[in-house]
Image 1 (cartoon, rainbow, N blue to C red):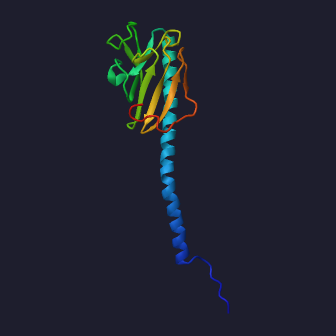
Image 2 (cartoon, one colour):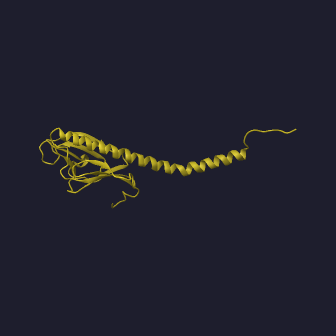
Image 3 (cartoon, rainbow, N blue to C red):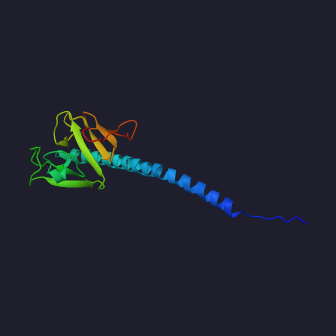
Length: 173
């Protein structure tokens, strides 16, 4: 009499589990990198929206500066805390006469820096919703990955083509 068995042997089950664990081990770092990339892209889009908000607020009357609030808008070294400041007295400085309109705080592991043609520690928009010939870029960094938000000379933002780049944020860049 022929006996038909259905199912897996213990050896077959162990081999299948071994293959699944090897695949999961190799895929985990790729997923972590993909999550970090998507986080940078999302924050770059948040920054673009923040810049558009600055342009809108400036069009209402007084100039608006986008600056590093934790550095009192006096410099723009690597930071996590950005602010839109209404420059009510038009002195291009953050002081008691000015009002903070909005803030953007980045996650712990992320930094942003600002590089511009005129080397000002802020991006300033006039009542015409334009920057005053202040083209440059914001560089968002998380570990070694980075993405640039480019500002045209009239103040329009765009995310750099190519998206997130590896090794863009190495020390000294």
